[in-house]
Amino acid sequence: MNLKSLLASAAVALTTAGAAYADDPTKVGFVYVGPVGDGGWTYEHNIGRLAVEEEFGDKVETVFVENVPEGADAERVMTQMALEGADLIFTTSFGYMDPTINVAAKFPNVKFEHATGYKRADNVSTYSARFYEGRAVQGHIAGKMTKTNKVGYIASFPIPEVIRGINSAYLHASKVNPDVEFNIVWVYTWFDPTKEADAAKALIEQGADVILQHTDSTAPQAAAQEAGNVITFGQASDMAEYGPFPRVSSIIDNWSPYYIDRTRAVMDGTWESVDTWDGISTGMVGIGEITDAVPADVKAEALAMVEAMRAGEYHPFTGPINKQDGSAWLADGEVSEDGPLLGMNFYIEGVTGDIPQ
Picture (tube, rainbow, N blue to C red):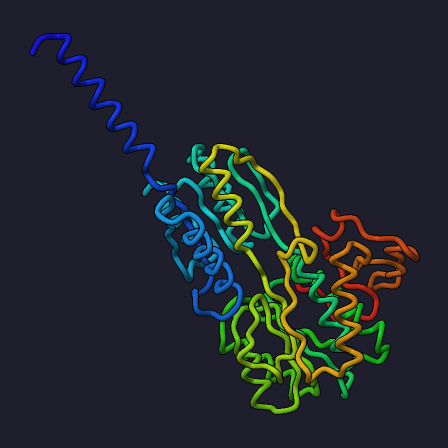
């Protein structure tokens, strides 16, 4: 074969290889803190992963690892995903923040998306939802429906996201019921059905007839169902199998549109590092059906609040609001900016107990 023929053959080979490379699917990884069958947080993130597959078909390949502890093991899992060719990796828990930043620095051509954190880099975006909007609705219903004036709250970790939720729920419960009391149990886990059930049972024994949770399993729902006279709300997912009672509504995390949009951005080359914090107005936070176990007037009030937030006419943190020590935080009619909410490390007036350090 002469030189001209060799060059022609090489050109054909390179063109074929380039076409094959261009046709390779975009590989998208997901790192989960719990099991995909938890019925709550991880379940909804996995729904988003499946939505990406449905949207893009064979143009994408998705992979996931579930039950990944927050820490060194998370860094190992992310590194392995990047080494195996992931183009985009979603890390779906607050404790993955530093591991995400560390791994991203080693793989500058891989795009990372970290849920609920605040550290960014050129190839790291952050995203979260305004869960506190849903807590406002839950607090209103809780304050109206409690007969014992005791509301139990199962809290995961003392981070701003969880503290915001407690404050929002209490603020709106106390607005409609000044006698309401919140009892908060910190379980230091996102997903542990045994701990969550034990916490729910302890709160019920202490007189709580409404249980709120910022943990991921349905165990508190089951404990309330067994007790027979306790109201609950689905967390992160609808948990509708426990409706119409004890579960009378829910906060639903809808990640699918975001996951589709960010995957598309990687595919078409428009991905940029951004912060995203959306809520009811965009549909990232959904309110599950308010069942007929809720009195009609209370249901109407709750739905009106949802619509006001959807329209941008109401913000759950609107003053006057004092801090727990009685000092002023927001003046009458003043609306909190995002910064203080994102870094919230204090209880509002009326919430008892201390935030663990």
